[in-house]
Every structure is written in structure tokens, then in C-alpha cells.
Image 1 (tube, rainbow, N blue to C red):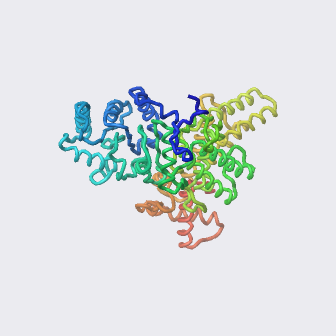
Image 2: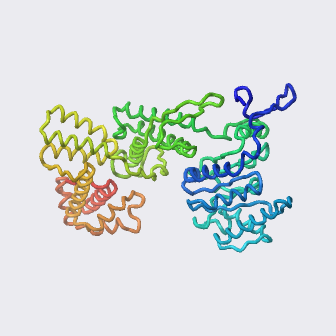
Image 3: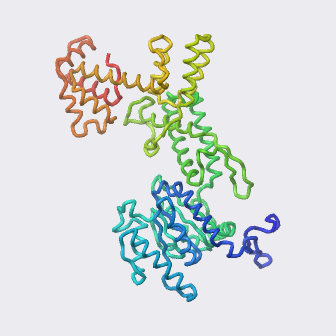
Length: 527
């Protein structure tokens, strides 16, 4: 049948008072047999890590019959990724022709559950089994703090748990059945308990008569919400990717307006930093939504519907993973005002769940290739213009370094140009930067310890902790460090610095202030 002539989903023609058959109305149930179930299971397993937010949340798979639930159970329990699965359905079997198959299936499910979770459920104890499954899945009562190895990942049902069951730990509902009206609203509600940043919305994946289900969902929304879709459904992938591109353009403008190329450092202006903070936080919200919906950094082009009823369009994502990691570095530097230190006084809102993200390994291959080109041109005494061009090319990739690393990168280049550093072919550019940074930090700590007679070991330990002003004196550690100060040496250093005699209380105040600042800012030259 031609979908241009016949709709995929049937509909009721009110003017003719009759139902108009759609293509999906002609699809026989035999279409949803073993091959279909195998494909569904493959989809569930292939997307499990993404949809479950790295195994944090659980899912329900709703099927059309007890027989299908058992068949799905037998497929899913063989999974190779360690998912713990069970099935829950009415144990009163009305159809005698199927009763043996269903009873054997239920016994298998109970025995597997008992073995997996050290229980002793039998068919007569099925009510207790159901309660245990519901509590375990919801992390309630005795399972409030259930350990990962004792959690359920997927529960397969027919009608059980689709009404009344409530848990913030369910974030995905897989549907291999066609539902209507109240049943749709009830079932979808199983995923709607939000759970902080990690569960901004629930996910519904339906596998059977998808166009008919789309129609049924629209009909259900009209009946039960007055056709107010806003707030019920999140944007689809196409809309989220479009928004990502818009936000990336806005972020790019913040940096370019401040004359910053390649996002190599934060803007100096506090208002611009605040604007970047807000934009990048929103960018992350859309990114996480898109990732749940199938976006991956490995692929930059997606064929998506942006507006319902419109044909698919190809969307090319403007921000690649390397650039995202660079922006994440800049975002983390907001806490330090742009440098390598930490401050508790940030004049704009910073999302600490983003700060906690691991940037992973930023690809410095291009940086090293440009550095090696610069070294080669220098060694063969190339023209001044060639070397300058190579340096400019190298600087384009400084954005992948923290602002603190960029300082040492410039020192490395300066020392190479002056002959104070001899190139070593076994070292990368990052090796040089890390070496210079470590040596400088080491020297700064040593100089402070000598100048004030401090306990150098205690100072190094405190510096290593990367403390903030709120936890600086936790367990009295800063007070102990100050107690190790040699008062005579402190006086000599401070009076030489200020060029005048100081009173005892002034020595104490200045000593406390300088050492406190040194620790909180990650060290500096004390002169």
C-alpha cells in the first residue's frame, strides 16, 4: 500500500461516521513473533547504558500477553551485559491450552529470582514475590539503600505495575503493545517522577504499530489534558540538536566579542563570564537530553524531524567533542576567575554537576604535531616568517590547555627560542608544560617554607588537597601549619617586604593573610 494514498494509522472520519483503515490495521499479529522480539531485545541492550544513565535507573518492558512476557524473559535473561531481569504477571491462567507453558515459565522466573537474590518464592507465594519485586524496583522499605548487585534492572510485565506503581528509579518504559486512552496516561506516568539533574524526564520507546500508538497518544492527551501537550512531552532529538547549535553560536559570540579565538581563555569581563556560565549550563541540559535520545559525539549529522508534520532535515552539529571538552575546561575555570586556583566567591551561578564532569583525555595530538613542526623549523634555521607562522599555528591549539597550562606553554616556547631549553625528542609539549609547572610549584612552596620556617611537609599536604576557604581549617590543619611558623623568620621577611618595623600583632596578621592566600590560590612567587 502507498502511504501517500492510505494513512499509516487509521482514524475515525466523523463526517462519514466511519473508521478509515490505515496500513497498520492490516499488519497481522504474526508479524510480531520471535524475529520481532529479538530485534526489540537488541535495541534495549544496545541503548541500555545511554537510557539508564550508566545503569543508574531501571526500566519496565510491557508486553501484549503472558506468553510474550515469558518469551521476552528468556531472551533478556541471557544478556551479556549483566542486567538483572524478572517478569511479573497474573498467575491465574484462564486459557487451559497455554496453562502448562505459562506455569513452567512462572516456575523458571521464580527459581531464577530466588537464585539471583537469595529468596524462596514459589507459586503459592506469588503475592509476596510481587511485593518484593515492586519494593526492590522502587528502592523502598528494606531496599531503600539496596546495593547495585541486588537491584533489578528490567521488569517485564503485561499489565502489572502499569497503574499505581510509583518510583523515581524508573526512567524508561518499553512498550511492545498497543494501548489507548487512560491506559496510556497511566503507563506513561510510571516514568514521570523526576530525580534531579540525572533524570530530567522519562523515556518511552514503543515497538508495535508505532504510527497507531502516536495517534493513540494524541487522542489520550486530548481527552485527559485538554490537548495541553506543553509540559507533557520533551522536545524530540531534532529540536534539541537545533537548540544545541543555536546555543553554540551564542557561546561563540561571547568569546569572539571579547576578541578571544578558539575559546583559549575566559573573557575578562564578569558579565561576559556570567553569560557564558548561563549559556553553557543550558547547553549541557540540551546535550544530556539529546544523548538520551541517541546523540553521540561519534556522529555529527542526523536526519531528524524538527517540526511535526514537516519532512526530515539533515542537522549537522556544530560543536564537536574536542571543542566541548575545551568549553568544559573554561567552565571549570569560572570557579577560579580564569586561573588555576579555587574561589568560593563566584559572582554568578555555577552548576557543580557540570564542574564534576570528567573532561576525559583531551586530544593533544594536533597540539604536539604543531609543536614538533615549530621545533623542526627552528632546528633547520628556517626563515623568521616560517617560524612565526608555525608559532601562530601552534597558538591556535592552546585552547585545549587550562589557562594555567597556557602560561607555562609560553614559557617553554620562550626558553626554547632563547636556548635555555634544549629540545628532547622523547618529550611531548604536554610533558614540558607539566614539568615546568611542577618545578615552579615546587620552588614556590619551598621558598615560602624557608622564608617563614614553615613545616614544608604539612604545607605540601595542604596544597595537594586543593582546599577552599570553607574547609581550609578542617580538623585544625591550617592552625597547625601556622603554629609551625618561625616568628623570627616571619618578622625578617615581612619587615624586608614592607621596608619598616612591624608590631607583633601585625606580624601575626600579615603571616596568616599571606600563607592563607598562598594556599587558597595554589601558590605564587612571594619575592
